[in-house]
Length: 262
Image (cartoon, rainbow, N blue to C red; front, side, top):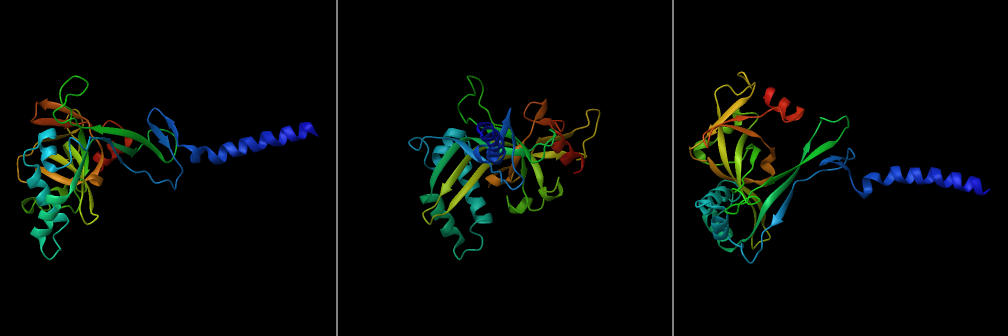
């Protein structure tokens, strides 16, 4: 009788382990997450800055060295948030004057990762920006990102400019991460990005089999965008400092397919 009870418990323990393995926490190995099919994955802002030091747009201008930030935020709100309101200018100024700002220095993004033999697998990427501060005792850091412009209006002059590139995607430097908390329970999760422009043939080409980007100086090149527009990190190989780069499409199968099918 005792042996039968031990055998029954052994089976039950194995069954319990199988049933709760995704409930307790996703399976994780070296920043790789394997989750159930119905599990929804979300990006997460990390590294919240002290509200004693940064609580308005002027503080972000100083901390992240973006002198035209207030103008960029104003334009973004006018073109993407308040454009259908009765008094567009009044609503925009109200948000800018009274919104509380929360700044962050990191963004955690789960990216589909088909390089391993498992369904519903994600690679966790950590995007970072340091503003004036150096990264681990070195130079300031601003990571490069793959962003989807989509239906966002960055400026009237550039309307439709980005839509013909990789289904509205483009590469850029991440300059700031912050939220605006309005007085009417409004909450806007935003990023400030310096966009780069595609050079020549968009399909990866040349001896290296990659695409190229260059600094973009036109209107809308420095823009506010929705945080959700950031899709993943991008690795750039510099050709000329601060002017030309090669986009490394060999980082994983998913990004390789995105670019070569674009």
